[in-house]
Length: 97
Image (spheres, one colour):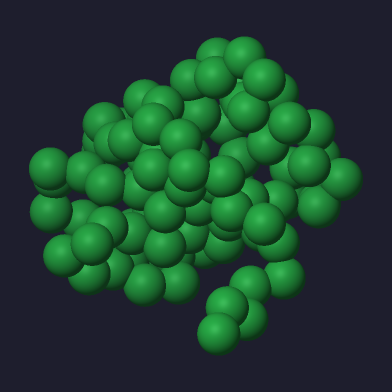
């Protein structure tokens, strides 16, 4: 059973993970699914869940996140931006990705 409150869109778009420490360069990743509430990303870089502060999704913008989980399957991010803002982003990515 799926307890998610938002529909997930399976995508493949390049992104950059940003960190709380501005001295750490962004990490390349791929967004593999996206919803109004969050995203699942994969990265070849070993990452610490407390260090990630946001994600830049292609040319669509940079959005605040909280890391929910990290595993071999990727990184689960929850958006900290308002749902109406993220709904517009998800629609734009789905249409123009």
